[in-house]
Length: 466
Image 1 (tube, rainbow, N blue to C red):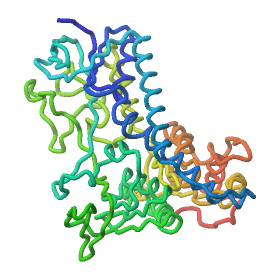
Image 2 (cartoon, rainbow, N blue to C red; image 1 turned 90 degrees about the vertical axis):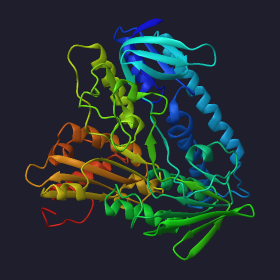
Image 3 (tube, one colour; image 1 turned 60 degrees about the vertical axis):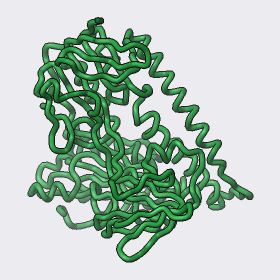
Image 4 (tube, helix red, strand yellow; image 1 turned 180 degrees about the vertical axis):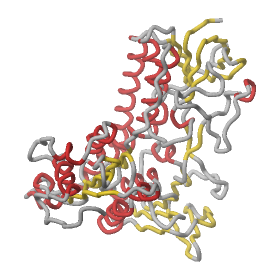
């Protein structure tokens, strides 16, 4: 039986950085993964979808390049070639993780871990099983797609992982679920020429966003990409007939080549045998932790999608690094609470901190500084005038409470806003910070001026608060 200081279970975006950091801090560390390095994010999530979206966006841009004086004929998308490039990039990154683990002295083990005691693990492998002992164990097993029983088992009814595993796109697609995953896949498929219908049982798509941000994305999805959105009516019946899938929404039957189910993800705990060590799950299936990411068993930590909170790869990475620190150091650090989020729709959206709705529910009086890309030189120069950025600030102190961006490069732009919110900057401090001209990031400067009531590049508003 081999003994380790730290064992990390799960090699996704939370697990492998956690193992690397623990080893850097002097711990003898093992990383256990039952599938492949990189987890869902690298292999069937973040990276594959963003690569395919990049190809779809380029295809769409070339089709509409006349505005830049570029005339191209007989444009065609070879999705199989794009899909193969996706596989190559994923493999390159996976090999990079393998190299990083080796260079940091982490022992990588392929197998399925089960608890025998809070400090001892049984590892099932293709070769003979093994037992490991660890002073501290970090759980980073992530989540998987949920497919309700309503949907019959069929190769034409897919969740996101299976959809990304196919090297061709259907001619028509029904997407069930208007959250982040469903909306991103809808934009990907539509830009590649697929006829897309998206069904969301709530009144609108992307409910985590403020209404003005949702409206901007919805307008683009419906009018620019031709996606049909059916909100406020759940899907009630699904049948596969004659090589097609028929789905009933209310009294309407919709027939498509495939159905993509994107109604949410659930934490992965199967095989861990947590009940054997008395570690009970929350009703949601998550593992509960304190602010130092420690479970009720002091030697066991849990991070990422396994715990309640936003299901984001970068959140998992941050928590993995903090858990590694807390597992090896005498003075623990709390998890980060300012977590930016990005949605890679067309256009992109990024948020951080409080939304307007959340701030008002807390009884706060706020000031909102909103600046449209249609008034920004760089956005007009690159032909991307859609969308806006906005600050949400405390009306009295002017402290930045939150921000949102929707439009070109919104997922990158939100990083500046995250730094500002985490640093508790004010509108004035941001407004005095010089930004490079001409850039998209200038929009934050302009939005701060609007929030202060002294805009430069949009007409003034006499209202000081909103």
